[in-house]
Every structure is written in C-alpha cells, then in structure tokens.
Amino acid sequence: MSQVYIQDFKDHAGEEVTVKGWLHNRRSKGKLHFLILRDGSGFAQAIVSKKEVAEEVFEACGALGQESAVVVTGLVNADDRAPGGYELHVKDLQVLQVVHDYPITKQSYDQTGPGPDFLLERRHLWLRSKRQHAILRVRNRIIKAIRDFFDDRDFVNVDAPIFTPAACEGTTTLFPVKYFDGEAYLTQSGQLYMEAACQAHGRVFCFGPTFRAEKSKTRRHLTEFWMVEPEVAYASLDDMMVLAQEFIQHIVRQVLDRCAVELETLGRDTAPLKAVLDPFLRISYDDAIARLNEEGQSIEWGEDFGAPHETAIGAWSPTPVIVHRWPKHIKAFYMAPDPEDDRLVLAMDVIAPEGKGEIIGGAERAHSLEYLEEQIAKHDLPKDAFEWYLDLRRFGGVQTAGFGLGLERTVSWLAGVDHVRECIPFPRTIYRIYP
Ligand code: 4AD
Ligand code: MG
Figure 1 (cartoon, rainbow, N blue to C red):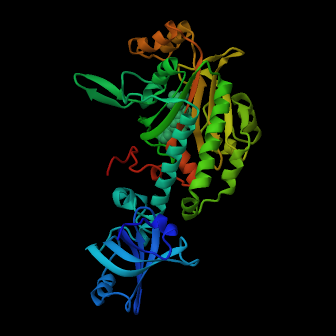
Figure 2 (tube, protein in one colour):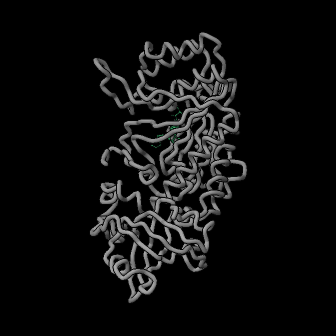
Figure 3 (cartoon, protein in one colour):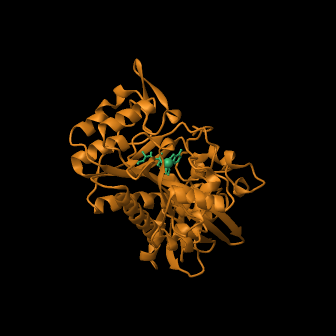
C-alpha cells in the first residue's frame, strides 16, 4: 500500500490508501473514534468504527493522545460535510508512538491562556498547529512567486554575502560579530553588492536573510528577516515604482490562486487583496505630509513616518501607497539627489493597506563619485570599507535603481497575521533567540 498525502485525497476517492502522520485531535463516541490526522500536507478526519477494525486497533485508538505518530490505512470517501471534502474510513492503524500531555492545547491560544511567550518558547512544536501550518504555506507560496517573478523577467539571482565590512542602512542597527582578530557585521541589505552585480548582469536580485539590531518592539520588527532586492542598471525611480507594483500584484495573484485553503484556515478576507490588482496610489512625501496634517496627525516636514502615520497613509487607497521623493537627511547615503529639489532624494517607500505599514524601501542610486564621497563622509562611514563600492562609479558608473521587499511583513499582510513573529519559522527578536 503506497503512501498518499492528504492533499491528494481528491485523486484517490474510493481507493484504499495509507497515510503516515500524527494525531491532531480525537473524539470518541461509543463504537466510533473520530481522528483528525495531519500528515504535513493537510488535515483530514479518519473514522474508526469498532465493527470495521480489529479489536486491538480499536482499543489502541482510544488511548491515543494528541501528536501520537500513526500510520493509517483506509478508504478515501468523498463527503461534502467533511472538512476538505474527503474523509478516511479506517481499516487498519499502526501506532508508532503513543503521546500524552502534548504541551500545546486549545487553552494555549486563549486570551486568558498563558500568552504568546508560552507558544514562542515552544515554537518547534507550535509549527504543527493549523494556523501556523497555514501561515508557513502562504510564506512558501510567496517565496516561489518572488523567484518566479524575477526569473520570468530574466533577472539573474546573485547571492550577497552575510558577513560584511560596513553598514548599508545606517550604523545604529549593525550587528557586530567577531571575525578572527577583527570585526565584521551581519548584512543589513545586499543592495550594495547588487549594484556591483547589475553592472555585470544588467538585472539582478538577491534574496536572503538580513539582520538589523532593531531595538523596536513593534509587530513589524525582527532582528533577522528575509529581504528580496532587485537592482536594475540604467533604471530610474519611476521604473522601480512600476516594477514594485507589478511585483506585488504578481505575488498577491499567486497567493489568491494557490492558497485558498490556507487563507480560509486563517479566516483571511480576500476582498482587500483583490483590490490590490488596481494601479497603486502614488504620492510625494511633501503631499503626504500635507495630507497627514490635514487629517489632524501632527508631523513636521523632515520627520520619518511612525506606525500611526503609515497606518493613516495605508488607508488612503485600497491598494498599497507609494510615497516618493523623501527628505535627504532621513534616508541612506547612497540615494540619488532629486535634480529638481536638492532637499530631496529619489527614494520610495511602499506602504501596505490594512495597517501593515512599509513593505518596500527603494531608490535610484547616486552615480556621481564626488557626491558619494561627500555622503560617505557626511554619514561618518569608514571610506576604506567603501572603496570597492566607489569603484563602481569609477568604472562605467551609470544610474541604477532597486528596492527591497521584506518577506515577513508581506506574509503578515497577505495572510492577515498581526505580528511578523508568526511569519517566519523561528523568529529572532530583541527578546528571543530560542528555540
Ligand atoms: O527600507 P529598507 O531598510 O531598505 C533597504 O534595506 C534597501 N537597501 C533595499 C534596497 O533598495 N535594495 O528595508 C527594506 C524592507 C522594508 O520595507 C521592510 O519590509 C523590511 O525590509 N524590513 C524589515 N522587516 C522586518 N524586520 C525589520 N527589522 C525590518 N527592517 C526592514
Ligand atoms: Mg525603509
């Protein structure tokens, strides 16, 4: 009897199959046991009837606790009332391990229960829950959508290093690591390396873990998160606004098409996601500041947006909102100055709807050697560590542009999950590096 995955039950209706998995839940009533099995691919109900299985199998089922490991053989039966549309009529069941007192119970999720730390401390087990299972499947789909989007457009995937000699996004969030007799930093962004790579390959992207020593305790900050960063030679800020919109729309379409089961498990209303397929609202930073003040949010020109501002901006359109042309002094050293207003740089942030905040940061890059040398000095960055980067301007330096999209914030938005710590398998925050 060959193993069949629960997600493929639809192709095996009426057949006898074997499922290898774990017991998620059990209800027993007289001569019946109702087992909810999970096998990694999904969840399904298995019905054990006293008259259809050997005596000892029926007895064994009655003693199974949550997360017991079982191999179950039975008949796949289509039933509209069954969750997922199919259930298994058990003929035989082999117990590999009987488990009792699995630490995560229904109460673990209650408002009055032990709280999020209890679950985070048991993240290695919590991953098995229906909701966490669904979230990581959405994440998986988003990762595939990201790779396919760039691959279909002939971008070359170039990996950026994790150990780096210097800051990319400001010195305050660097993670120093001992590096033999010296010091290195965990990467804050692969961008500078993508600028080098796009001068070799034209259109490139990197996709990997990124580190920020963020002291923020918000729902949007991790110390280790994943970022995808495209970079295009000869491209402008406008080109990036177009690319970012097409990119996000592609991801959303894939999630809508391929994650229906997961979105339902998560109770995600899909109407706001469908609205994202319209053109994105674009607004300059200047206009955004004016509009925020009109709405009674007091924020001065030159300030960065806080979470409440981003939430307000996100409500201006059912689509993400692209805020472009930012004050120079609140952005990174590498951004191109706006030729029409020297207070500004050609940067953009893409702000997600539904209060999810910034998901993309990007810019056109400064290509003047002199300007960059000046900015490196102004930002107090060690020039030595940037000599290689300055070479890119010395040898065939042209305008390039790119952006970075945060994976966990995107998952949190699309899956409708409040906190990014549920959007990565093993979250790292200021408070947590276990398990
Ligand atoms: O806006 P950021 O800092 O941009 C860059 O790093 C650029 N170098 C990217 C580029 O142009 N190639 O970060 C980009 C995105 C943010 O919009 C956010 O989605 C995510 O990375 N991000 C975080 N996600 C989770 N936790 C954190 N601490 C994050 N910091 C940034
Ligand atoms: Mg940013």
